[in-house]
Structures are given as C-alpha cells and as structure tokens.
Image (cartoon, rainbow, N blue to C red; front, side):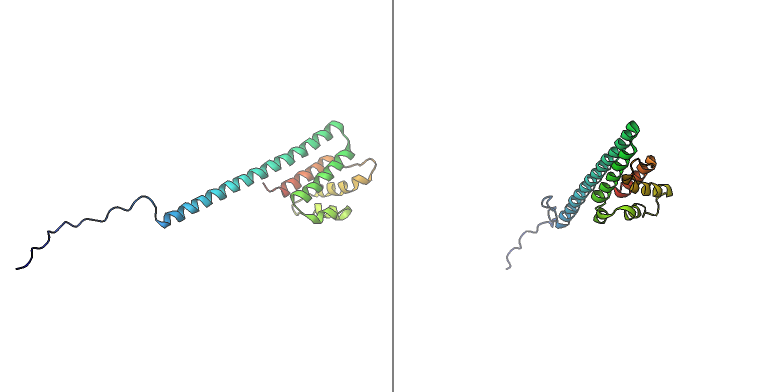
Length: 157
C-alpha cells in the first residue's frame, strides 16, 4: 500500500516587490535628476552673476555720462572713457594683447568689429588722440556710444 499523498495547496503568486530599496534603474534616474538640478542651479547662478556685472558696468558708464553732463569737462570724460574701455577689454574680455596697444593699433582694435557704426570709428580715432591735446575737441556722446557698444559686445547678456 502506498502512503497517503500530502495535501495539495493552492498556487499563489509571489509577494509584491518591496518599495525600498528601489531597483538600480531608479537610482540612475535619481542621479540624473540630481545632476540636472545641480547644473540648472549653477547655470542660473552664473547668469545672475553676469547680469549683476553687466548692470554694475552699465551703471558706472551712466555715472560717467552724468558727470560729463554736469561738469562739461571733455578732457576728463575722454580720459575716463578711455580707461573704462581699456579696463573693459582687459578684465572682461580677458584680451591681454590689448594691454600693449596704443595709438593707431588701439584704434584698429576698437574698430575691428564689422557691425560697428562708422561714426563710432571716428569716435575711437578721436578718443585715441584726446590725451595728447590740451583741449580735446571730440564728440563725447559718440565716445560713450562706443563704450556702450563694447559693453554689450564684451559682456554677453
């Protein structure tokens, strides 16, 4: 005689997978999300820093214009604009070649961009000669327009 068979049980499914720890694919997705968020915060911070710098440089240029309108000293306005342009090119554009440029080579550097208006080219030439004149006769508004052009060119906003 045979031994009685064990009782048959119902077939049941495997338990549901646990919520934690997640599968490795979710770790990859979470890592990509964290990297994306970090990159986005960094990009926003960098843009904010550039905008703040642009505003500070623009405000300085506006203050130079106001001082010129108040005192009318063309020589002082020309020297301030010249220093402003040099500092802008040296520190913001980080173009060390511009440090040694004077006279006609400085004018060529300032007038090199193709989209520069012709009256600004004249202003650059007048600005280069202004320090060597006792009473410079230059169009100061055009010189400030040249400064605004270079500000927009150098600080890419």
